[in-house]
Length: 82
Image 1 (cartoon, rainbow, N blue to C red):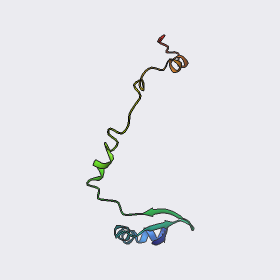
Image 2 (image 1 turned 180 degrees about the vertical axis):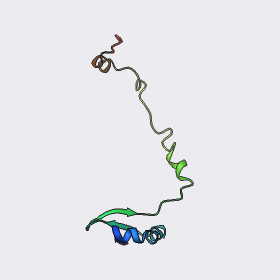
Image 3 (image 1 turned 90 degrees about the horizontal axis):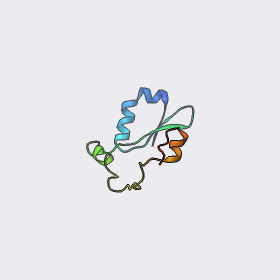
Image 4 (image 1 turned 45 degrees about the vertical axis):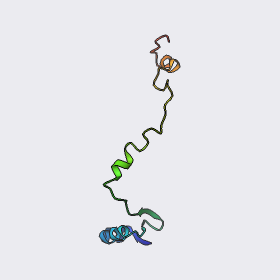
């Protein structure tokens, strides 16, 4: 693990990023405790495909999920009488 204070991080950012890219943990400190940690990010080419649509078919909504709620409509003065 590499630890650097903010000034050292500003001065050696490229070296710290290289260390993170090699898989080394890099911690940036501010007046003592670590405040940031840099880790290697996985290949970004497949990242978008992993994030968007990852939960497709896993989330199920109740049949009345987007139906009107009479109590809420009444509170806002838009009751439809349902």
